[in-house]
Length: 449
Image (cartoon, rainbow, N blue to C red; front, top):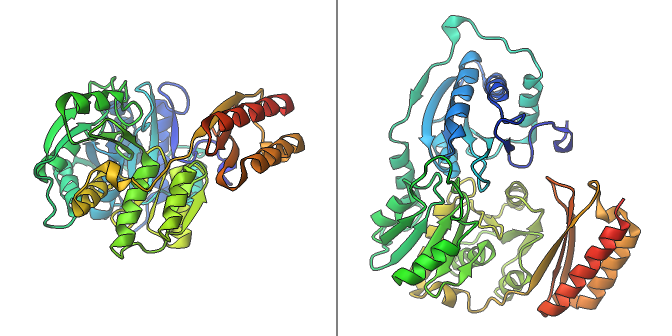
């Protein structure tokens, strides 16, 4: 069974609208049981961790997973609201069989999802996800009463993760004298991110740190950084840092209010590692990474490779190449020399270390990066299809690529979640690439089946 053939798992676990299959309590109970059966091994760790973000539905799904895992004979340790990368870290430190995250990341509160981490703190491989799906199709059978799993709560999980985050920077590193605005998106970082930066010496103005179960990602966080930008300008802060609802993404703004996205943060981290002699290999971006970032890395002799869009594919490329640093424009950045998955707090700290080492601001760190204009047009079609298989579309793409030359790019890709073809053009002149993108979109609309 390949990913394309799976009925439940996508590129980042299982996700959807609460109350709609499969994001319903009956299915999630069965999923917990299936995961317990898939991971249960005689004579080995039979404990699984469960963490969640701040969505109201998280209480319901936490209980359902706990019941399913117990029915399969797995012990459960409940973490409560914790960032996704914290669950990956704690799964490793507790030597658990696996970790489960209840979160829909940057989606609104009415969505939720389930994703898993292996004992190593990495996303599950295809074989394990396939095994879980196979158990879902089996009849639920409860283990004997004496073998049922037990549940307990880990009360010191936030403190453990705060200390881990601080351990990813040099021992004498200090944020003394810096005023930071930290936007937690009313999500899973609300009780840990401000503490990390305060304990390192910063003056912190926290926002998006009063979750009520419904306001996660609502006009705040990394997907809506305007409120943070305004707070930076109003307070005269040195920097703004915004996370998404589950804490694996980060976006920043400098003291002038200029937004710095994941592509540029990736460049800052990679450049600092490279100049310090600590960059092992090159950098992995995605098909959407701005060409200006790739060119800037190239001028410094830093190899660059593109993966398909999605943190799963970035990680796969990093592992295959044995490189350490990769990420996406959305702010999902992986520093494999520090942790095993994308971590917004850890990534922000690496950027702050670069600022500290060079005694300069974000804008100065990006002085040699010239972003190229990029235009994306979404073409809604009657059914999903692969534009690579249509000669009329490919002929138009080749003509557009010839028109843009070496300092331009064309990318067509089908959305993985809706019947939409995304048409992206990138080049040196905004008006030019806008026209090219619209013309290509018209071709896609005409040629679509």
